[in-house]
Image 1: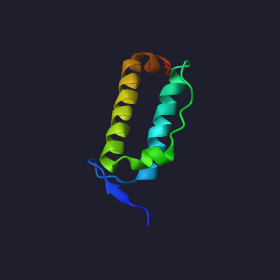
Image 2: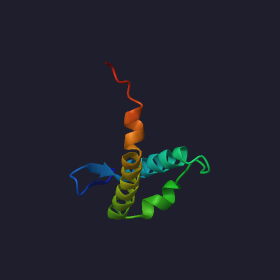
Image 3: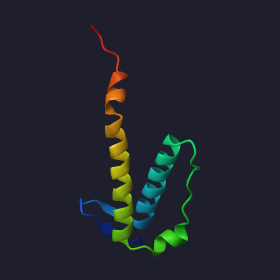
Image 4: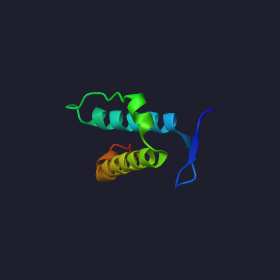
Length: 84
């Protein structure tokens, strides 16, 4: 049976789900910075981490992504077609 964990925000997650989300966030960051390679996490190593550690890694990556979006908000909003 797969172990689940209740996060600080009330999400019910699995280790595999958190690991997949961390990998996706890292690849999203790598996609924005063309100098970085795609990330492949070693699942066996990541499984050793505690749920709380994985949650912390994920939350920090989410915050970094949010900060990147916020810093580019004006530019992004400038792309919206303005209809008269």
